[in-house]
Each structure stands twice: as structure tokens, then as C-alpha cells.
Image 1 (tube, helix red, strand yellow):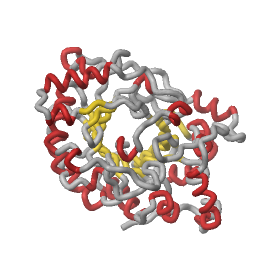
Image 2 (cartoon, helix red, strand yellow):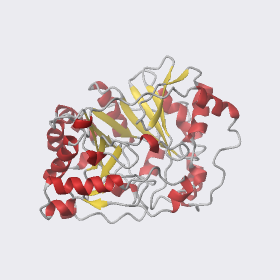
Image 3 (cartoon, rainbow, N blue to C red):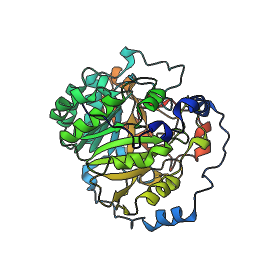
Image 4 (tube, rainbow, N blue to C red):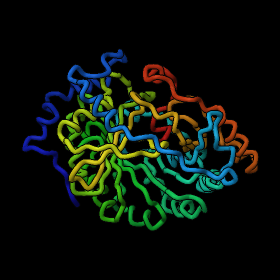
Length: 397
């Protein structure tokens, strides 16, 4: 088992005096939703110039043969949806503050959660219609007892190129060898701090060392890259950004910094948002050899290499620089509802038609109609914060 200790002899100094500041941080999470300032006053024009100087030229979309793609997956704006995220469960073994309200949430009763057969049937329908990437999410997908069998069946679907999973890594290390054998070929592990005490505060659970063990186990098993998702929140972990970048120095790790996003129950406040431009400025001042990678048009992250580092660094900018024009993602929730936009409240059930005897053509019509209703882009960040939506624990990452 391996452990990571944040740089410096006194990690608590990096957390601005964790013990004394704990109550202040707690109040930050419970604070109101006043808009405040989007960027800090030390954000300079240099960060913007660096951001745009590293922007790649637009890449031409890969040609797609019309006869291989179902019209079911094309929305009214011509976007082709080839990426399906499937939530396997709403249950989780952590209680992250930005994901689940402190009072908890009412979970869907087990009989109303999609069965393995329903998941595979719908996944097969999507893949045969043109989906080539599936990501398994939760809750925490690894706690589902039939996870290996689900992976095995999905990975055998003809036409599926990528089977991914987003996990908190808490129980992953011991399950990962079997999951890889079952066809899981891409992995995202969520970790928001390198300080165990802060991890326990944020997740309301212990287990930081087990998450680190899972990251290193994934590297040892040959996952390349191992993606580490970090939601950056001002006053909590924004002082650890460069510590996370150091994870990429010797190992094929892709650290993905995610802008804090509003969902029901997490008391979103723009003052907690650390923007892409500000994060880029922080990294750019420490690492001068930061170079933008040419991203695919459907890529959600802005990706960078760092001179001398084996891994890479990415930024997911849902709040300050949305990527809706290239969106190719659909979400199938654990209760069988299809959600065409992460930030949109509209959903349509696929579970109920299946259980009422719908055939594949009827399901295609329901899916196609929902995809056609997808909007051109989500609302601005302040409108999102006021729009009713489910907690992230229900939506599935």
C-alpha cells in the first residue's frame, strides 16, 4: 500500500491552518448564493493571453458514414451523440459535500433501479445505433455486486470502442484486476484533496489512503492515462492545485481540474468557484513549459502537457467556458430516466416502457424524440444555480 503526503513538512499550513479554519470552511459550504466576484483581483491579463495563446486550431470532425448512424442520436442542431453515461446505482460509500446534501437524499427503491438485463438491453440499443463510448457512473458504480458481469457484457457489444468508469476509488484496488479482465479500459478516479484530514472533512468518511492505493494500482495495471478528477473549490483545495500537478511528473496520470458546479443540495456559491482562467494562471506561473494539446471537437476538457512530466493536466470549464456546441453525451440514470443535458431538468423514462413491453423500435422513438428536444446550450451559470435539478448523487457524474 502506498501513501501520498502533500509537499512541505507542515501540510496544515497548506490548508491555511486546517484545525483553526475548519469552522470557517464549513460556513463557506453553507453560505448564501450571492454572486460575488467571479475572478479574484490578482487575476491578470497574462492568464487570459496565455489561455488564448495556447488555444489549438479547430480540428475537423471525423467523417461519419450516414448508413452506420441512427438518426435517433442526432439532435436538431446536428450534434451526433456517440457517448452514453450509465449510472449503475444511486448508492455511494462516501458523502461528498458538493454531491450529496448533508441531510442525505431519498434514494430510488431497489426494485425501481434498472436491472442488469435492462442496462445491457438499453446499452445494446444505443451501441447498435452509433454509440461507441460508455462510461459507468453512480453513486459509486464499484459497489454494485454485478459490476464485473455488467462490464463483461457491455465490453462484448460490437461497435463499442471504450468502456470507462468514474469511481471514488475507495474499494477499487482489489476489484480492478477483475474489472480490467472484464473489459474496463478507461478509468477516472475522483479525488479532491491530497490531505487526509481534508478528505475526511469533504467526504464525511475516512479512506484517503485507499483512494491513493487505487490510483497507483491502476497505473501498475497499465491504465494510461489514469484520470484523476479534482473539483476545485476556493478556500478548500485551491491551494493544492500545483500539488496535484506534481502527481503527473513521474506517472501517466491525467489530473483533471473541474470547475465547481451547482446541483440541488450543494448550496452552490459563485464565491467558491475557481475559474479555468485563474487555475491556468496558477499552474502557468509554476510550470513554464505548459502547452495546449489539440483536442477533439467533442472533448469536454482543455488538455495540456507539462515539460518533463509523463502525465498531463486538464481543465473542465462547464461554468465559465461551456462546450455545448460539441456535446456528444447522453445520460442514463440509475432509475432508467434518460437525461440529454447534465444541467437540464427534463428527463424521460426508458425503464417504464421496457417494463410495459415496449419493443426496440418504440424505445428508439422515445430516445430520438428526447434527443431532438435537446437545447443548443445550457443556461448561464447563475441561471443554472436557480434551475431545479437533481442532486449529483441521482444524476450520476
